[in-house]
Each structure stands twice: as structure tokens, then as C-alpha cells.
Image 1 (tube, rainbow, N blue to C red):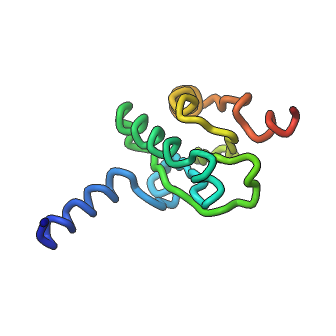
Image 2 (cartoon, rainbow, N blue to C red):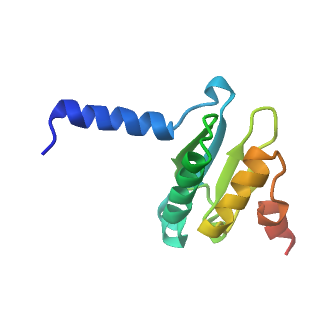
Length: 125
């Protein structure tokens, strides 16, 4: 059993690592994963974990990963919104864990959204 002080230290470390619900503080890029029942059922948990792992692996200090509830488009889950300061939001749909590294590398690090994974591409099919 951990003491309350140890649990509080773990909580603070976790929050600072993931920066849940950081609202564009210091120009941070935000990755928001839909984690309502529909998203979870479609596989959002492993997607969110993949984003957290990639952000940690690449030591991206300017990126926060958080979650949101239902956005009303269950058929497109798992959905991920990427907010880069100064750019329009990009919504990725039907996201799988193996897509995450490419999104992080090309979009978040490189500044070029992966258009074939976006809601616009899905709606055109």
C-alpha cells in the first residue's frame, strides 16, 4: 500500500506527463482522442496509449494527449482531433494503433496532415 504522499506524487507525475486537458498553454499541440463508449468499443484505448507512447518516445514536450466524450459520429470511431496552434483542427477517423506513428511523425512533427486518414477522405469514399 502506498502512502497518501506517494500516491499524490504519482498523480502529479502522471498529470504532468500526459498534461490532460491542457488548453493550448504555451502553444502546445493537442491530441484529443474520443473515449466515449462508442470510441472505446471501436478500439480507442489502444489508440490513445499509442499516442502517449509516441509522444514520450519522441520526447515531444509541446504535445499534450487528452480524451473527450462522444462527438456524435460513432460510425467513424476511433476518432482523433489534432489541434496545432495557428492551424485548423484536423480530425482523423477509423484510427488504429499502427497509424499513430505516421500521424505523429508527419503531422505533429512535420506539419503535414496525413490526409488519407482524415474525415474528409472518409466522407469522399
